[in-house]
Length: 521
Image (tube, rainbow, N blue to C red; front, side):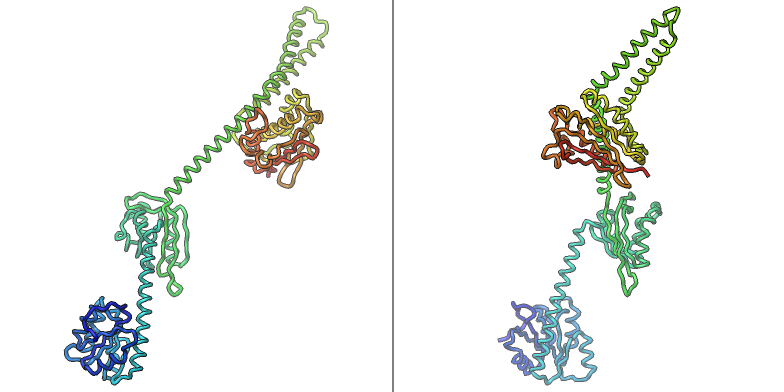
């Protein structure tokens, strides 16, 4: 038994509604389609057909045209006008064979036309074909809905703001993020000209035309543009920094609109400013650390300097006393004696002044200023500073310098600090060894067309086994009273000059430290 106007539990693709006022035709259709996996529903007039269609929503309707009351054309028209039934596939069954009748049927929304009397094979073939098409259409529609839902979900969850523009620059689409960032609602944004909106109604932000002009270029010429550090206008009139890209929408090789993707970089800029502040503080601390290292070095050398300075000062005092006694005499026996004494006073005073001047120059905290410096003269001045330590340790410093070296671009005080630190380290490494008589060698030579190289060579106890991994690491030291910052500071200084500080183990024992300085242009 076949039920009319009864709810059906199978999938809608399997439901077929048969509509005909002729019981014989209905019986033939039932026999033709039975046993093929379809749920068959019947209606004997147009009104009944509409009720069943709304309730059961069949996938396909085989619809007779010539029926009393509401004919098939009207039934089809009403099915297609209703959102609930417009997707139902309609095939007309009719004895009308005129072309105009078929055209009219197709114009009302039918997809096929079977003429009466019909053949069973034709009905089956057309029904199967249209059901396959219906399934594909339903699957495609479902997929499209899923894609639209996915797209909407993606757009809603994106952190970047998105504007869709027409060819005139009017906003046709705005996602929630764009509303949050600009302060305008999506409704307020839609229909606005993006460039005009971001310039303000009174053109108070006319300077924005520069950063926004790439949008006009993209709309007019169809080229993609990416802009960093631009500025958009908030609904409250404040400006906020953005990065944005504008990609044209092409239609027949011509721009038909564009998509603008932007993001608020206020936080990025705040982070950059904070990072720069930290870097500035680190640079300041590095300078302080460098200064502390120099003071530490000078503190260790203070006793030697005091002894060195004391000798000429004592001599000055003695010669001054002699000069006073000679001047006290009424009759001078030899004017040359007084002249010689005064000359010695002058010489010793100059010597004391030079020593003190070198100390003050080294200890003074200078600005980091690069200049063109003679590398040989620079190392010679460092050698003079190290002479005191050498004499206190009964050790010699051998200076070997290549003639005609070009000037280097360095901060002379910082480079002196590096060289002096390496020389003193070399002497300390040899202090308690039989090789101390060999002394420390300091060499200057041209490494290549870009750098001058300075080598400090000692024959001391050498480096620890883990030196390669830790030597330039802060606070690593093998000295009982060392702070572990000397070589770290030296490494940092040379790197900041664009050079390299390296070391190697001396094949005969000891260490070779080398650093390079860039040649001045």
